[in-house]
Image (cartoon, rainbow, N blue to C red; front, side, top):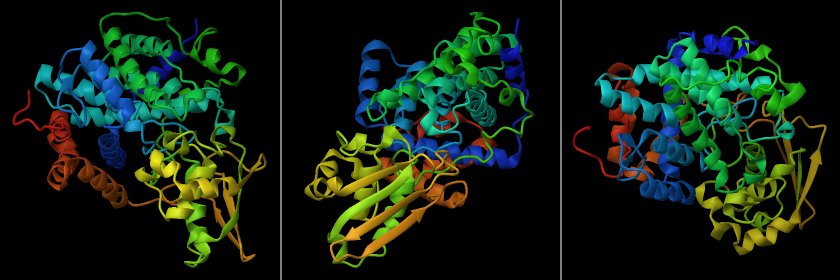
Length: 460
């Protein structure tokens, strides 16, 4: 009998995960995730799920971000996970993955339940479990052998997210090795996510389901629910079922610190779209800065030289949401507007006359010689103007990426802007103070109270 699942569980959950620098990064990820969720909570996908949940489940102790009711922890993990991912504004990881929306909503919902049950604060324990879950996801992604976007056969957060959420929730619950390994095995049978659904509302469901399924796996294991002893590495286990001969056990058991989940760390998103498009957006903005006022309206042709990523080669996005996953559209809207924000992906902007006029003028050259890994790819953009002038721009890393890091205050400013738009300045201040004080005061429910649509005077 193989022992990979047990050994991986011990490796991750046996890590102390309490270094001050690590905790500071996790607090920043927590703040960014909550602010992005507040911005995304009223989008159609999370709203549909919240409305359905209201008809299927009763109230509970867990907060639904930016809504006026609570829910069961499982429902809250799913709905908040969708809200946290739907705008494609959460950090990116390398190899490609969304490690926050698949994990943080599960831990928040569970911590609220535990604080209600025990009366004890769980903020400090949540941050440590958060770090362990992110480490688990990075190692699972490395083990897949699918390290570049063009190699992917499934959407990564739906495949690795449930397993990591199960381990992180097991850590927060204080489960022993046997139960935590069972949680991992249960979650292994509840993972998946089709790349075909990228560009639709279902993409965010991959992340919401990962959070909810991982939490449920840990709660089932706590009750004695069983799974195969090695549903991770066995002959018919998760690794070989999904990745076949590519599956590599070594990254799962490497000494902590040798993995790449928290090092090189997150690439912070400053545009709400698929991460590779940030390279095209940055090049387009740099090219636009070289134009004078008359030239901006005199673009004859746009040439984009990009890595081969067929799933974001979308010359005619079906709607604004689909435009988040289009090299062509993101470059065009950046050139036209000089910015890329939420309004860039509204249907009204997608089908505006100036966009419709410029999109057909984009020529895309997908070059297989350009690396697809996010820490090595680059994009070249050229504008051919009606005057005959040629304007060129190159992007090897967008701002916020691993080689162009931003300071914490830039992410705090992003979070404040999103929270103020959702709740107003006073509530934004309350939320940011609550997150900043989480390790000291340690009460997750105090943080989540600030994110309810109608704040309650006292905690339940």
